[in-house]
Amino acid sequence: MIVIAAGGLIWLALAATRKRAPMLAAAAILAAAWMWTAPAEPALSKAAALPPQSRTQKGSCASVAPGMSADEVKARVGEPDEVRGDEETRGPGASMLLYRGSRCAVHLLDGRVEFIE
Image (cartoon, rainbow, N blue to C red; front, side, top):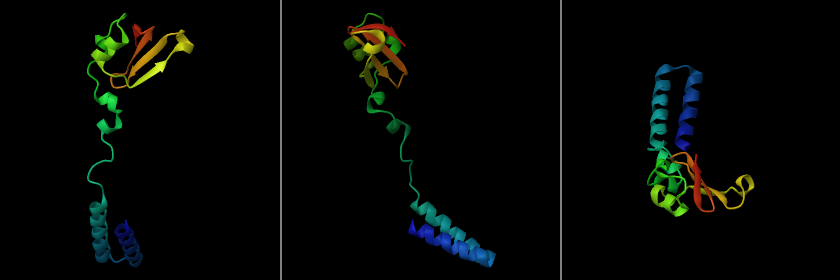
C-alpha cells in the first residue's frame, strides 16, 4: 500500500511539471506496484458465499411428497439450511424446512409434509 501511495505521489508531482517521459515511467511503476499488491483471487468464491449446508445438499424438493416425515425429507434432500417454527401463522406443530440452494420450503405439520413451496 505504501508503494502505491508513493507511486501516486510521484505521478502527481510529474503531472504538475507536464513532462511526458517521466510521467509515463511513473505510471508504469504505479501499475506494476498495483499488480504486485493486488490479490490473486477474489476474496469469496460463489461456493464459499453459500452456507455449508447448501453445498452439501443431496437432492431436490421434487423428490418430496405430501405425507412424508421430516426424517424422510432430510434423507432425500439433505439437512435444511434453516428450520423455522410456523406456529404463529399455521398453528401448533407447524414448521418449515428451508433449502436455499434449491429455493424451496417444505412445510410440515406435526412432523409430516403438508405442502412444498
